[in-house]
Length: 110
Length: 117
Image: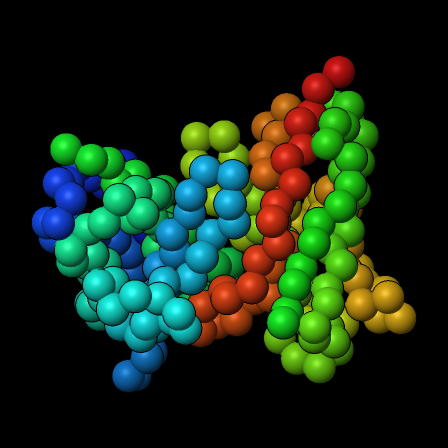
């Protein structure tokens, strides 16, 4: 299985930039497709797709969210962070079966 | 609007089977996509369990392959999870979702299942 590694937590101040990283144990890219996706999850809610294929903003997601990366290293950026963004963020790869998730990064206020 | 809703018992005894239903509205499960079960353990780890495709074929996580079965009732637009021989380590929140290799855009609300005697 492809293992996705995320830092467990990140502390940020409101209005600042948050950068959340995800590293894969092997490439999750196929030709021009980077098969890494990002989700936001708040307590008691289902995950919400934020970014698909590494850098594409999902429908209805604010433009302060962005994604980048290829191969094995990916980044989710939130700029500027708002109070509503306090949540846990997961990366997920669909390059190989089984699809796998990172351990999640909990975004906290500094 | 596509909606998925899980239902099933919230408490299962060890060694018994866990059975959950996912009811889908707004989209016919035979029209496309793969219909998945995903679980989130206490402590945040998430695991994709498997899916049933729109054509009825299945694909399971090898870690669960001997215990899991995903089936469907196309007349009710539902699909089902059965997990056999559960232990306390199967305690989790279970989600059904419409799986897409381009990102999972539709999830159910989730149902918490506790395995305990």
